[in-house]
Image (cartoon, rainbow, N blue to C red):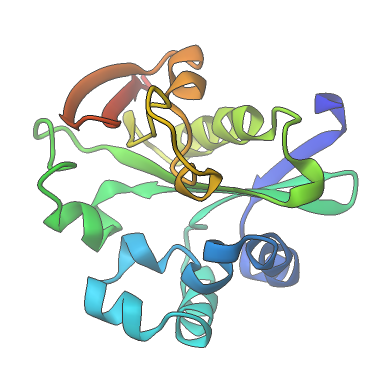
Length: 188
């Protein structure tokens, strides 16, 4: 089945497909990745239609904010990836504070539509997000996955699981929360 998936940058001309992916996820339907980009008060105030409108504006910027996966012609999944500096949440976070002064890109969100779950799509989205970041000049990629050593609900897995990042060659560089390491991959 992995050979039936294809991946493209998430651009404004694919808005309908991107929305189909987000709308098939309880949290994603209302968040639209605004959690990472906006100050918390703005994110909460925009929950739902406000964040949806904000995301449409985000897609109009020159650099796409992520990768969209398709299964045949069906939109199947999303992975958010962009320079760390654009994410307000990361600028303010103590647990995810910078490890060093290196300019990094961040992978922070995966959404898979229900019909395409448990088919390895997150791993493929990660692979293509890495390539997208490299092509766009990233020297280093960082992520904040969930270490599934503790029992978690599926709604908490949106940042990805530690295992998919380790399997892709990322290494753990810090852990300031018991279940949320910071992992990195050198892209040079």
